[in-house]
Structures are given as C-alpha cells and as structure tokens.
Image 1 (cartoon, rainbow, N blue to C red):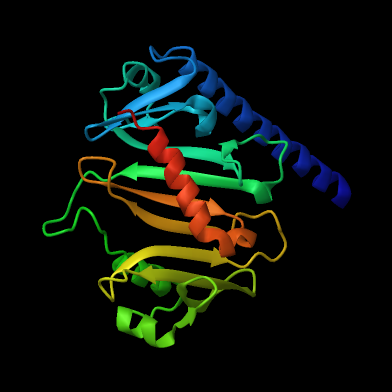
Image 2: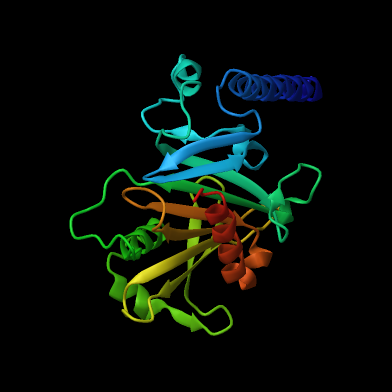
Length: 262
C-alpha cells in the first residue's frame, strides 16, 4: 500500500508538471502569434534607446513592458499593442557560455548563463546615474545570513581580498531551519578604484552540494546607459565560471549593447 501511494503521488506530480508546461507553451504561442511585432524580433525602449533583439534569446520569447500586469487575465490584449516606442520594464536572456548563442535545452546546464535586465523607474535624489553604489545591496545580502551585520565597515573587517578574482570576499552560512543542514554562502564584491568604499559589482554564490548543474552564482551590476533612470542587470552562472566572472560580465554587456539601435 505504501509503494502504491508513492506511485500515485508521482503520477499526480507528473500530471501537474505537464499542465504547467502546457500552459507555458500555450502562452508563448499566443503571444508570438498575436503581437504586431516581428515574429522573429522583440522590440522596446529603455529611455530614449530602442532595443531590438531576436526572440530566440528571450525567456518565453517576450519582453515585459511597463504598465502591464502580466498576471492579469487580459495581459495578452495589452501586450500585443506594445512595440518599439513603449518602455520596457525587464527581460530575461538565456545563452550558452562561452559562445553567447541562444540557449538550447540539449546542452549542459553548466554552460547556461541567464541575464536579466530591469529598468529603474525611480532615480533617487542625489543618486549618481553613471556610478551606482551597491553598498546597501551588499549589506542587505550579508544581513540575510548574519543579522548582526548592519554596516559596511563590519563587512570589510570580516572580508579578505582574493588576488586571483580581484574581489573582496566573505564566507557566511545559510542555516536551513527545516532541513537540519547548512549551505556555505560566498559573497564577493569590487570597489571603485577611484572612490574607495563604493561597491560596483557583487557576486553571490551558494555552494552546490547535490546538484552540480545548479546555477549557483549571481552577479549584480549597474547598467547606466539603458533607461531614463538607468537599469540594472543580474547574471546567473555556474560556480565553475567564477574565475572568469569579468569575462562573463564583459560578454554579457557586449550582447546587451549590441541589441540597442543607433
């Protein structure tokens, strides 16, 4: 009876998974067959810059525009009216490392890179548009795993400089309340060379334990040239690529910038 119950659960979960996949594929098909945009390209604006990118790069083949609630029942009706002149809220790009070609599911997950770009809608008073200080974000990330960390000076005292990576580094532990185990968290960051104490780049990595294909590193970076109030990107990649983080960032920026029209 125990094994029968387990088998029944597997069938139920499999059915639910198939339903989710079917819904996702249906949404993808409807979007790409109802939009006035090119069936090959997605197009939208970041401030006064127009981005045009092949849909095969994009997650589900779509951009997310501002002023659309993509959870609402009538989002398709709103989405199909959008085009190059409409402001983009965000988009996701999936590529293969190191070629940066559109991702295909037949490849190893270790080769996958996921880029997300989001346009800021608010620029704080006094905030430097060109150079965004990620210090508050760094403190917030560290505080998730050690609630005693509330200031950047604390982080710097605990950190060591990794010459190989060219980054400051800090190791913390994520305690799982219900699983009775601990996951090491490594946080790296880079300071502006010309303004010590201002953080320009953050990389957070969760040590992978059971799943070697897990994209366990996430890089946060300011993207100043896209959007009226600037944009920010995050890049997810496998921990094996950490020593190449600068190249990952550089190639990602090249791909994004190549999508903007002159």
